[in-house]
Length: 355
Ligand SMILES: Nc1ncnc2c1ncn2[C@@H]1O[C@H](CCC(=O)c2cccc(C(=O)O)c2)[C@@H](O)[C@H]1O
Ligand SMILES: [Zn+2]
Image 1 (cartoon, rainbow, N blue to C red):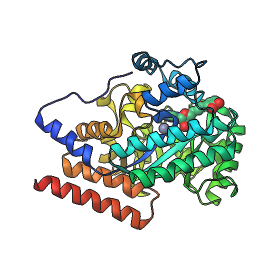
Image 2: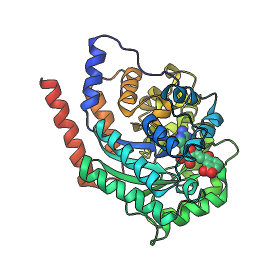
Image 3: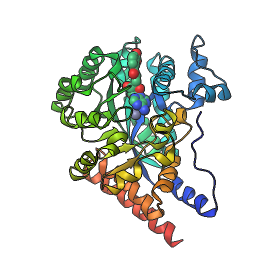
Image 4: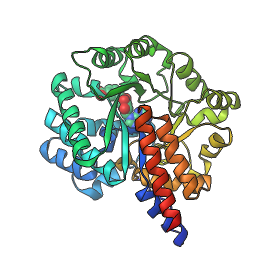
């Protein structure tokens, strides 16, 4: 596992980390399978001993060290292979919610790839029932509200796009918590425009468009996501920094970027944290949200991503509170839900600064 955590500095850094730990937050870009903790991966690997995923935590850390993006996807799919029954799906979803709640995440949009599960033989209605059951339990027990983004694993071809669109738009199947439609996986050799008809169907069914773009290819992929897929937020969008006209467009049209700094280092999309373009995004006036992507696989969590952002953007508590509010603003919560979390962030920050 790549160690990209912020080095422990003086008291100020520790105080900021304590502040972040208690800060109410929203997470907009985090993958379901990519959130499986070492404990859950071990538990699933023990349930399915024919898998090549190690159960020992140290071996798992090595297993989660990636040579490049393609290697990351290979490893990712071996964890996908561990999820074989609706009960596996329910366990994973519920435990992901518990971890989000521990970090004071009040609201999360979790990216799920239902195609990967249905093609492996999980019954589609059993799958939907499992995620919905976990969502309701998590809200009741932890107070964390979960919503779903169903994403197309683009490299799996148009068959996966058709299946994802079907599962996301058929009223007899689509789960109540579904709010958005995405596109993930490798970008090289997987042009975005071919997915336009599927995004058109999802948008017509009331879903928001949130494709990954510009993570491993250039700014033209982000333009394609905007013009062809009518993206309302961009997953990563890292290479947007290479195109000042694109940054101006994102800022003017208030298209938020879902920035996942540690992920970009772990998958080798960006060389070092200091070379991460997050500062260029904020300088250009783009609405930046901070997210964790596949946290245990990248040796991080959302709190650590906020600490990374605080260092890269030189933020104090108020700056961090504003960053947390960006995610609330960019979320697909209704106005009352947004106002409630924003007020919680303000109350917490004022109390912290007064203490
Ligand atoms: N940083 C990331 N950037 C992009 N995506 C990320 C990231 N992290 C996690 N993902 C997830 O990886 C999946 C990829 C799955 C995939 O490519 C694939 C290809 C062929 C067959 C199958 C199969 O299931 O049989 C799957 C995406 O759908 C997405 O949800
Ligand atoms: Zn992602």
